[in-house]
Every structure is written in C-alpha cells, then in structure tokens.
Amino acid sequence: MANQTNKFIDMAVAGVKGLRPYQPGKPIGDLERELGISDIAKLASNENPLGPSQSVLAAIASQAKDVWLYPDGNGFALKERLAAKHRVDLAQITLGNGSSDLLEFAVRVFAAPGDEVLFSQHSFAVYPLVTQAVGATGVAAPAKNRGYDLDALQAHISSKTRVIFIANPNNPTGTWVSADELDDFMKQVPAHVIVVLDEAYFDYADYLVGREGYPDTIAWVERYPNLLVTRTFSKSYGLAGLRVGYGISHPDVADLLNRVRPPFNVNSIALAAAEAAVADEDHLQRSVELNARGLKQLGEGFERLALDYIPSIGNFISVDVGREGVSLYDALLHEGVIVRPVANYEMPNHLRVSVGLPEQNERFLKALEKVLND
Ligand SMILES: Cc1ncc(COP(=O)(O)O)c(C=O)c1O
Image (cartoon, rainbow, N blue to C red):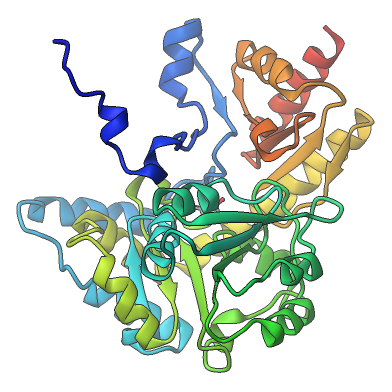
C-alpha cells in the first residue's frame, strides 16, 4: 500500500479508535488450513447442530430464483408470522440482520457520548462494543456467582443511564434470572431507561425451565413500554449463517429502531427461510430436546472428569478446566475440536462449549480428558 500522510486512525471518531472487533468462534476452514485436519467438530458458536429443517431448505431453494429482486424492505410476510406467533402488532416488530443488529440499533437510538449503557460483568461481548462505537460509556455491574446480580445492576443505574442490557439466559455463563426477579427489577427501572432483554436462547431456556420460572417477557411489553425483547433465528432455528433476528417493543420504540435500520437489512433468502422456520414447530421441538440431552451428557462428562461447570439453560455450557483455558483450547484444536476460550469475559479458567450432536459431545469429552492428562 502506498504511504499516505494522514493516519487513518487519527481520522476515526473517538469511540471507534479504541474498538477491538468482536472475536467470533474459529471457522472450520481456518483450522483445516492451519493444521491440515479434516472432520472437525465446531462447538464454538452456539449453533444448532441439526441445522435448518427440510421445509426451510425447500423455502431457500424456491426463493433462490428471485435473488435478482430486492427483498421486501419491511419484511411484511415474516412480520405477519411473528405477530401471529407472539400475539403482537406488526408495528411492534423490528427485523435485524441477526439480533445483534437490534442491540446496535437500541444503543444508536438512545445513547450518545456522555450517556451510560449498563450491563453485567461476564455478559455478552457485543454490549460494550456497540456502546463504545457510539461514544457512550459502558458500565459493567458486578455479577454474583457468575450470574446477574439484579440488585447490583439496579444500584448502578444513574441519571445518565439510557439503556440496560440483560441477556436471559446469559452468554457465556448460561445463567438466568427468573420471572419474579426480573419483574421486581423492571418495576424499579425509571421509565426513561430502555431495557433490552436479549433472549437469543429463549427456546432452549423455555423448554428447560418452563413457563413457571422463565419469563414470557413479550407479554410484558404492554406493562413496561420501555422494554425491548430481542430474539434470533441463529440458535434454535439453525439459521445463524443467514442472519435474521427481531425485536419486539412498544410501536413508538420500534418506529425509532426502524429509523436507524439500514434499508433491506434482511435479505430475501433469509426472510423466506425464517418464515418457513416459524411454521416448523416440530424441528424446533427436536432441537430443544436434543439440546437438553446434550447438556445432560456434557454435565455428566464434566462430573466424571471432576470439573466444575456452570449449570446452563442455553445451548452451551462453560466449564472450569482448572488452568488457563486458552492452552487447553489450543490443545483441543489439535484434536479437531473447536471450543471457545472466555478469558475476555473475565473467566480465564473456563472454556465454553456449544452443545453438539451426541457423538460430537462425546468426542469433545474424550478429547478434553486426553488434553487434561497430556
Ligand atoms: C446473548 C446473545 N445475544 C445475541 C447474540 C447474537 O446472535 P445473532 O446476531 O446471530 O442473532 C448472541 C450470539 O451468540 C448471543 O450469545
């Protein structure tokens, strides 16, 4: 590259200068290239090991011939399906290129330099990133036993707080807050603070905990107009590669979110696939059942290896490997298993593993035992 007189970094806006890009799980192709290994088990990005259902694949194939057309920028057909499923108005729904889009929109709409965005220690890495990108100040409240401490979160609300992020369940800990705890918290949040309830793992949690304990927060939007609930097709629906998520909120909040939403942010194949996915309840059921069995299998495996793990209601589980997780992560790569080190979440001795197919879970457990003893 030719030398240039300006340093581009000096030209960047303040928030962006210090940003470190989100570190995704290692792609299978990278490991194949780097170590020349094939037959890799990627358990690093909380994907659905069943993949999409047959009906979704058929919808994708039939949509393919129309890719020369722009998608419906309003995603009307998908919104209709979602509105019926969740019993909300179309005007309450905002579509995202993954639910990460919604997290970013919320901060862009409601927070500016000088404002605070509140989240918890050990919580999803995207929250501080989107906060910093708009030049707002991220505030991390301490966690308790790795999970959210809603009292601590509340104590950190200040006159500058504009947005609060709560991942329920949380990634990478898999911990969760109950309906009663969350309701008590919401009652105390000032009405001018937007609470983003990030429910990327809703279906797994709902299946594992049941309606008694796990909140049905979409029904709460009526009561708490400052609530934005986000969901995704990336996890339980097996569509991570297509990037579709959505938010449900008060229509006035949705209107604001839609103002910053880029035109056509969800492509036509993704819209068609998501529509078909909503209609396929059997596949969803198979996915959450497989996940529950996988969590049990992994938990029992950790117990056999005398390793502490954090009980999870997501499609992943974090285990304390009793030493620097990064070194075991590297050793596991040589065994053809990709997991996720979580030192950047202040959990240096943990590894997060996504629930795979039974044989993948078994392979991971065997590899883990081997590298622990090497
Ligand atoms: C807690 C949480 N929220 C949101 C997301 C974003 O998912 P997506 O943008 O694929 O919908 C993830 C993905 O890992 C997550 O763990």
